[in-house]
Image (cartoon, rainbow, N blue to C red; front, side, top):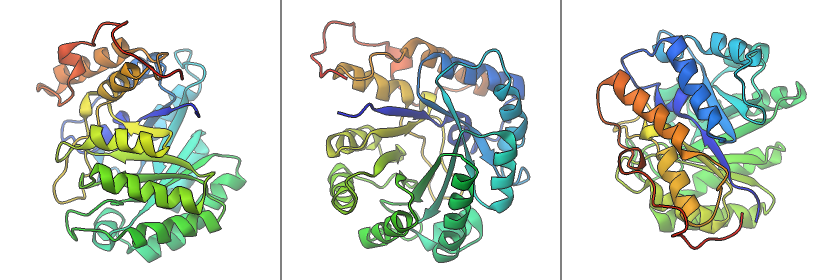
Length: 309
């Protein structure tokens, strides 16, 4: 079994919808806690228009600081999201270590999120991905609204597969499916990933589930069973897309890690630093976050029967 990869997206997807802007120093403190947990990737921010997403206005500064920071944890990859060519230029200049970009399978969501339809966005994203690869940067491409759309409803699986095919034709094999609207169900997750693995058995597949309707953890387990090895999550269950009809938080990182550890997987990740970050965020925002483990604590070690990682 390949190693499971935990991609913490809280500093980006978790915060982008929040109206209360987190000061840079505080955000750095949270990122340091997340890195200390031993997760594999931390998504520091997105290179977007700060007027539209004020929480991301300090993304360049955060990357420039972390690139030279003594507090940087060895082995943790720092990722960033780009939506257009200008954002890619900024990401390359900042030394982003994993560049993430994607296209929505819903034309309506695509237009609200990027101002472009799906086909136009795809025609720009693929050349951008090739440019990043040519610059020596690893790239992850995604299909957003892959399991449904708050505006359009059901998204045909053929639409998702068509985008995946275009990625594969361009030599892009690190691919994430994002449940932007939180519409996914476990059976749908299994069927869609199985279809992708049938086309490309060597694809590096990731998943990104929102808990809008309470199914994110079940969908993560279905993805795991289907052979997915990458999991994107946010500490505390923070997050949501500001450009979807009904926004829900991401699957919670500490809850996800706890589930995996109950199965004997990723025992090397420390849950305590994740809980500390979540409680710090709760104190800042002045509300309870939707995650569970930071309130209940973990089930004591030695109880779970497991699978070796």
